[in-house]
Image: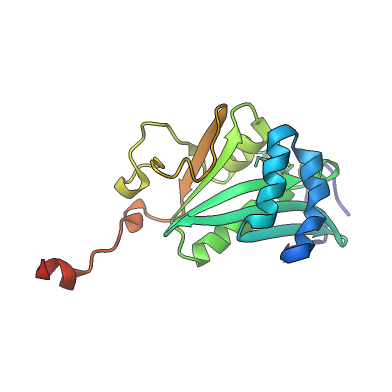
Length: 185
Ligand SMILES: CC(C)(COP(=O)(O)OP(=O)(O)OC[C@H]1O[C@@H](n2cnc3c(N)ncnc32)[C@H](O)[C@@H]1OP(=O)(O)O)[C@@H](O)C(=O)NCCC(=O)NCCS
């Protein structure tokens, strides 16, 4: 198994975690978060629509929590990697997996939040094409990355930055116009 810095272990399996199996991720969350974040991460683990895990030799080593916020908009609530398995590209594997699933589900823009001083997290998202979204940015419906109206749903708190990226051409996020309906107006 090659687990030196920056290398992925030889056998990583990405799995769905449903129901009681999600409890397997609790030790990773305890290892990864403190205070209110730990509480919120555990609560989200039990409520979020999709939880993906990365197993290394049968042991759960990393977890990602994903949600569709509204049509076309996906949110990575949390990615957490057990401290013994950091810098093995498990975070990146789970993020790539999340982006592929969002794309498959016709999600066009993906957001994630990170504490502004969480360099590993911000670097991970940047490595996959995310950038920080400014508060006054044009909305994603207008071609910017602005998430007006969605920040509350994302439970963003002070001290956090919002990151985002389009999966495809921004123009494809705009709501589809039904030509028949608009002609009849
Ligand atoms: C953030 C986190 C998920 C990264 O997971 P990871 O599996 O260790 O990261 P990866 O090995 O996949 O790294 C991918 C890229 O992310 C960046 N990165 C990851 N950890 C980093 C660190 N400690 N410092 C700087 N960049 C880092 C790098 O760009 C890296 O690419 P590189 O190795 O080619 O330089 C992990 O550190 C973690 O679980 N932290 C605690 C929980 C947390 O804060 N989660 C994010 C908020 S939801």
